[in-house]
Image 1 (tube, rainbow, N blue to C red):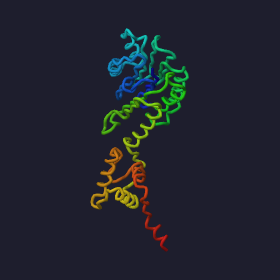
Image 2 (image 1 turned 30 degrees about the vertical axis):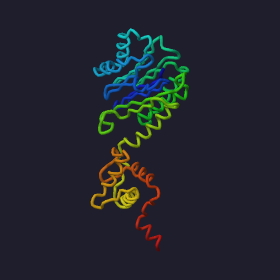
Image 3 (image 1 turned 60 degrees about the vertical axis):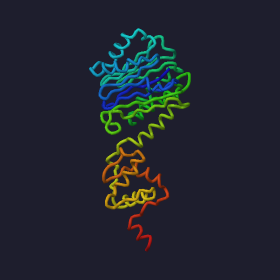
Image 4 (image 1 turned 90 degrees about the horizontal axis):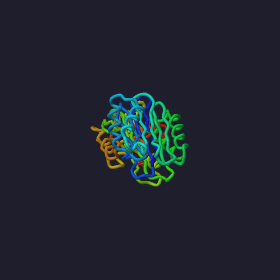
Length: 293
């Protein structure tokens, strides 16, 4: 019913699962991940017990292949199961029971495992593998999603499309310092992987931390422009508390994760400009003098 990729990032800080299926809310059933421990996907005839049991084994340092072997050995319905696992180090591992509906199979390598059943053919897994291996320049959630999208474009689930999900964990990397960096689901949609891509872009805008190298000092022309934009949106700036209006507006826009005292993230500034596009940016005083001469 499903194709998925389970992976960890090269430095071991992030683990994740990307999944798609012609099945309602596959993202609610298939993935599990724990920071600094590992991740897994249970699919075909899903065994939900694999998720806590697998993470418990990974937590004790069991290798991915041994986790797979242990879970399926204890399962009388293993012939109908499909499973992918990555641990904190080493190669990933995958299992496809002989009774899974064709086409069914999987591949695994260092830090990743891709698997699927009821697929149009093995080209789905091939496409996921090639895109994953070639995507190391992408941010980890985007790399997972790119591999999922490649599998979808290669034909995916031979019955069609319905749902998709993306789960990524990182120590303290999520909202308000949680370990859940990304947890997005498209439960019922005619093009769920494309919709998941849209949701990830929104998530990145709202919840990614700003890049310190790109931050702008909230002074001079930047402060003047921000003040004019905020005033146009009904948030006049008090000179005694210049950040108060910015923080109030950003909170309403759900951008609080991108706020930095005394500075402004260019992503926030661009969002502010789009919200009040009729306000021109103030020109530096030297330019104004030149224009008046």
